[in-house]
Amino acid sequence: MGDLTIGIDIGGTSVRASVVDDRGTMLDTLRAQTPPTAAALEHCLDRLVGELTSRWDAKAVGLAIAGFLTTDRRIVRFAPHLPWREAPVAEEMTRRVGIPVFAEHDANAAAVAEWRFGAAARGHNTVVLAIGTGIGAGFVIDGEIYRGSYGVAPELGHLTIVPDGRACACGKRGCWERYCSGTALVDTVVELLADGDWGRSQLAADVAADPGSLTGRRVARAAADGDAVALAAFGRFATSLGQGLAMIADIFDPDLIVLAGGVGAASGLFLDEAREHYARQVTGAGHRQLARIRGTQLGETAGVVGAAEVARQAIRSTARTLAEPGPESRPVSGL
Image 1 (cartoon, rainbow, N blue to C red):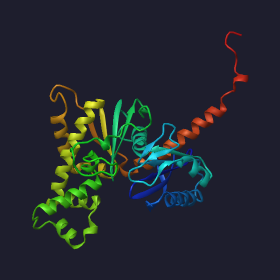
Image 2: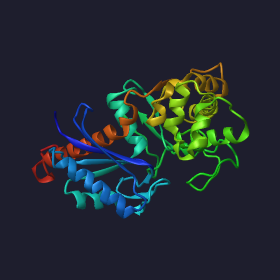
Image 3: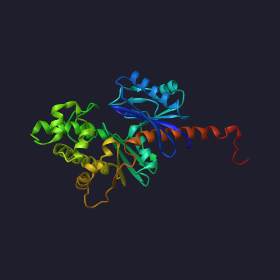
Image 4: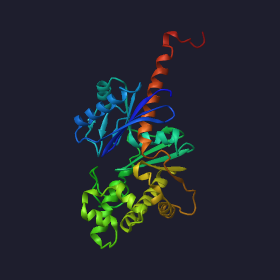
């Protein structure tokens, strides 16, 4: 099975931890709700790693984190949906679990997984969008993650697409992820229900009976069943997605865009319509080559598999560095 590592995808609502082999196969998986405080979250991670390492000889842990990390990925500077602020997460978790822990932006982890094992395998300049609770993004150039000068690029989910629009956890208004995510689907359904009578909609009846039952997954299931409210919500979702894809094309000019994450896995509900909006709105429409747009091959597992791969590559890189001869043992050129 090669080197076994643990990948942990830490989302705004849930945590998934898996033992992953070097072919990207998940061998053992645990889940938990995301705790609200940093101390509770770190205890949760410690418990999950401890349970998995009691059953498997894992060499390292990778954390896929929805937030801003420093360029060395040791400090989580800010995470809109998580409690860490300027936190040395990798160092603290290494101390707690007793094996090396490496942190990565969750969308970068998904991009690594899709490029290594999935839909982005043949991309040259590839944008991977992880659409779940929010929107994360990774940009892969010939297999290398692009991080920007300070480690936070590309934060596409917080591009403004609706001036003075819905409030976002980042502190701005009208961010793309507030109109194109699992959370956004819920908000859109609430708005649609408030604006009109949807008659025979089962989703409307369910929400009226139990407002807490409304989730992005519930909207996706209802849309797959042909529910009118859910389909209308996905229509608005597709419009927003196409608008954002056009902006991405104008900025990066990628040859491939992969839609990953929990909502991305339901791309059959909105992708064709989003492609049409993208093709119409991109600058130079009709006079330029468009990026291929694919749904994920790894689905919701991309963050976990990518985090595990990041950890695997890190320990292999460390092993290679330690195996290299020191300066005193290297031959001197010209002698």
